[in-house]
Length: 549
Ligand code: DGJ
Figure (cartoon, helix red, strand yellow):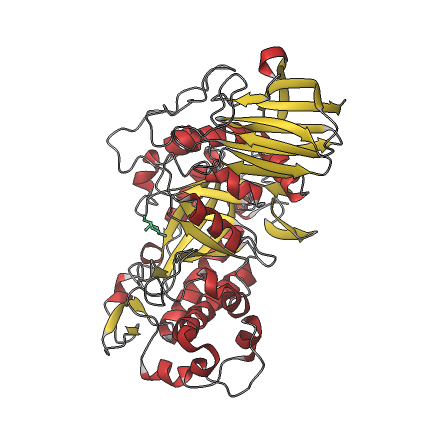
């Protein structure tokens, strides 16, 4: 199909008498989508399951002049997707005038760097506030009004009942999506985030007269049903939900607004859309008011699902180090009605391993925040070349580098990303990360158990724990007795489920993936297999054939 950008060339050709060779036609790729099969989700990109190995740029890095500090980081990380904001204040500098230039620059440069994009629409909400509304809107708070707090004061947060703001957000977001559809037949942009951490800090809901009237009115039937409450056409929010009434009401109000923006954009270009949440403590949640209210926190996901059906995914921004909390969040967002996608998390050494935990719950993507060079004095001219096979996995980022743990993960997975995404979608993959104080994890695969242990060293010492908990592994079943194994800082061994049987390795191939193809390095045996398979710091992949005796 001949696409829009070629239109100008066609016009030129018509005006010329000389023969000009047309550039290769831009092939239109299938529109990315979220699909579900046999209870599992996949993000389909170019018609096949895709695993987003993401990195999010800093908030003020989505400007052409900043991109030279972004791309080297993406290359260093071996990321396949950049998450980067699109600012409403830049996009609509004057009412109704849309400036596509920055988006076009980002998309064009992403193509040049062979990287996909997750564009973040910083619209009405950014971290609970209206700071990215265009200047001319912020200057007119009477028209584009804020939420009113319990004391009757305007809060630093937009009102979800401001239809004037909502209409403009709908128009701007729709223009943005329409433009993407025309400009991006290659589907460089694979997913879009609608708003950013929408909701409100410092007030549990809007207390304006309009909001109060709705709060005192009946709860929509869909909300009652979603929250497991009996149908009742006249029950008020307070009577239906008690202590959770205000936070549920605000979630409904915010989700309804965001859902309308999302639906309008999706109607013109049906890319996958998601909304991200600033979380509450997943284990000991405080009372409403102690966390950002209104966004898709775990307690109100069902409300978001019914009030914003155009949002395909609600996603957690996980800034927690404690494994119990981290794993609980993953569990809460891995639902039958919601694929697990972590669009923000801290990039530090002890958190990167949870990428494997997300994979273990069929995660479709993972993206540490703030991984660009805009805040560092040092910007490499280019990412260092990949080390030769067998060299430490510090390619592009030394162990001292904050990017190292994520680079290590993505360097291992990127060349086999499609296989990993497919195996996970088919339910054949399990993955796990080390939890402090837990020396081993067992993954069950029918007749076989894969035991992942930590800190055991080279010989047959009992597993303990790594000095810092950095162990992580994935195991995927390729055949009846064949497995693929990869990871770092741990040992993987297999045990037959039948207690009277013992495992023997028929063969263990060590290799690396290159562009989706397994490249054999050597057969492991002897000390390298007798006590299990040690995964250290190299980005190697093992293909294991087992038997019992
Ligand atoms: C979460 C937000 O979603 C990001 O945009 C950014 O502000 C980070 N917090 C800051 O750490």
